[in-house]
Length: 263
Length: 306
Image (tube, rainbow over all chains, first blue to last red):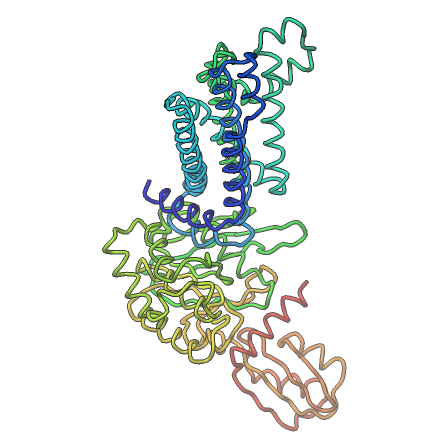
């Protein structure tokens, strides 16, 4: 375990030098503070069209979704570079020729990448909670439950980008993963919202695609359901089991590919 | 009986269009300093990469200290210096060795003392707190050697260790290797620098196009072959054909024939052959071949065989 942590530690050091992280962080903070200027909502409250509670909840959901998508972008960005950079620059050689299993190397890279993503998400979520506390005088601990529930998605996204970056050009691996996430989220909206289902019957190919893809959208909606009743929670457990199964498959494939890779 | 530190048994490695190693059989005994010579593309780096499990052989077996090279536990006893050292440039020399020490599973105190000792040994102690990105090529090479020595290895695998070193650093590295040799560390050096190998190594193997062209101690290799210069009057085709049966590298220029005697052929056979084929021997000069001569000859012979 200490060897895995040593690799994770070096990964964190390397990733913190990536300037794009700070650009993404600046964009995320910009979105966070933009939530302050919900002027049209204030007008609607004055007109009695929407309650103050509703606008607070909508603002929270909007901002929290921004945090989740920022986290996903960060996952893609960090994970797409973590492995290929070591391989391209051959810095992997002096690590992998030590008494270190290749699986430990993968685990170390994964832990380092996940640590940065998670620390950033925690920092943004705390900032977000503080911001709402200053605005409304209330603290809603559910946002941490949402973050915890969405964590399997981050783990899966990092793992999938790792795997794809071993066999495809790195940017394609990251874009493909985010494309899968977006597709899964879109299909989950169609499948899990009763009101949508009342007007739409999915075709067989759509159903097949929905069940073939990892249930990232299902977990995303399940996480949001912890904050708002507007989101369905009924498929949460099934989605989490599906993600766990995909994680096992992805890691098995990744180990297989990496064990056979000539360095 | 000395046990084997490295054993390659019918080791073959194919790349898409190239056969980098071709049924290679090689044994390096524990405690010896072994030099693997060969021109660029001979398969030297491929062999060392198989030994440290960076690549898998197409067929055959590689054993390190009597265990499969694929077993990561054996790397606890190996130090490896790659041909092109790539180190994360944002780390300092000390940070890098600390990281390498962690990969060997050393505790905090052990890491610190080993890193300091190795940095001093390779004359890099003063540069330990500088970023590796600021190091010269020679400094990176010396730091590479420091990481290879960090775990007090039983077996040291060095791929072109003199690459990028100035003559002074080169001598310092040679002295370090000679001291390690005295301590009984097995050293395996891949190189295309004959002088380097000649000065340090007990035994030498010559690799060309993935095949072993020859191996042995320097004395064994040079004793096996004699280079001869003959001055002959009346050189004819039948004479040359007969000479080629007992010698290699036969070259003729006016009345002078130069050649290398094959295997254990005695030099006394040559005057006999010349006289029997109606020619007249004017003079005969012979000398033992240098390692350089042997290297060029064996490399050329493997090319000719193909």
